[in-house]
Image (cartoon, rainbow, N blue to C red):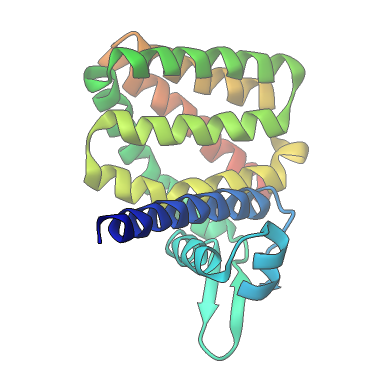
Length: 224
């Protein structure tokens, strides 16, 4: 009986790991436009693509649907969501307030380990800026976002902000080669990360506002 329970727990943990992997790989493929907006996908197709079972793929797609990256339409199929500039600007209105709160909270509450991680991310952002390395920047941005949500210790703000991160990164990836200043964006992320690592609450909030100012200006340039 005990061995059966242990086996079931091991299977559950393995399934969780596969779901996390499926979500991470699909999210990156959608955000970096390897799976373009408007694409119709299926559980079977994605299962073959990722080399995992359909259950982890289904669970990953449900999470992506909550984050507006895919749209699940009963009896019609699953589609990667379209990119909408007006929606992006509405998102930024909410993101400004939430990101400032999270940056200030993280500066106050994060552990020493997390402070070291923010410092490492800042250094990585500096390197991405020097190389104009867009993929490294995108991955560091995701790492920064996840660490910020964890370090701030506010589950309600984190839940709301978590819904916005993928859409924001995908919008960036679509337009950054035409209208973005990637080195500047990386430096602004690095400045926010360093203020948090140093425990400077007001500076972290101000750095977050400056970052969102830039992101909003970038979004408006795409309209022009």
